[in-house]
Image (cartoon, rainbow, N blue to C red; front, top):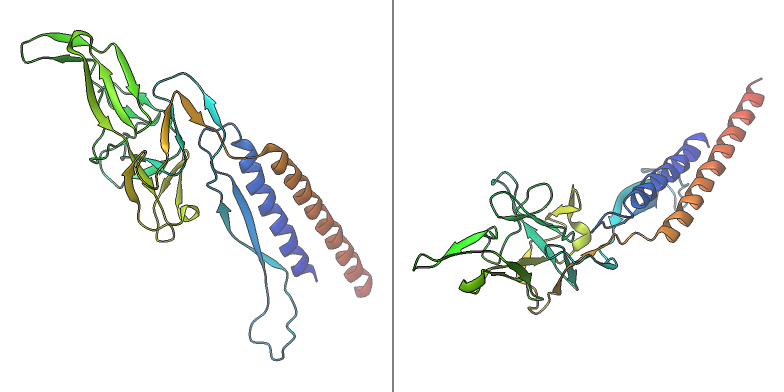
Amino acid sequence: MIPIIRTGMASASKDMAVISHNIANGATNGFKRSNAQFEDAYPTGLPGNVVPGMGSRDVAPRRSHAPGAIRTTGQVLDMAVLGQGMFVLGPASGEGRASFTRNGSFQIDQQGFITTPIGQPVLSTEGLPIRVPTAVTSEGGTTAELSALSIDASGVVTGNYGLLGTQTLGRLAMARFVNEPGLTALGDTVFGESEASGAARIGAAGEPGFGTIQSGALEMSNADMTTDLTSLIRAQQAFAANSRMLQAAVDIERKLSE
């Protein structure tokens, strides 16, 4: 009995850990909540059709990639995906595989590249980092500085350089997966592809199967505080109930052994 009760306590503890992680990231842009999953445990190799249960065991949490609410910021480099798709990021070191995110909180680094706060470049449909020059020079030698930057719904990045007019600087790449919950979490709301997720299908905003981009807005966490707090209370009650059962089982064994 005691080993079975211990599995119940372990499952409730795992559930509380997953829910607490969701609550802690309730204000994290682009965060995707997870749900703890459990299955019944049975012994193996026993004869007969009726097999006694051995409690429960947890399996890998399942992540929900449902979109979060959109929050307007007014910052051009804040981008939200409306619909399907994820931004494609290159490695910060310049070597490694691409990764993916729904967190569109981007910035321009010292070299003029659009990057994440931790330095990962945002890739274009050509698979290259998108650079925003602070100034451009025409063939005639006229130099003009960047006066405005805009990103349209299809992900085209355009810079306005005064008398030299506007210049297209690149188009943001987007990725889709057959099984998004199968993506590997890399931290900082960034994900990597895996065998479970399948290979990335690369495209651009507005193309068939891909959503559009809203500049000046961010996708918030898809964690629901009301639901998660209710689930946390339920998990705490389950843990407490198992604790009382464990104490009762220990007391019974102690009395029988006297």
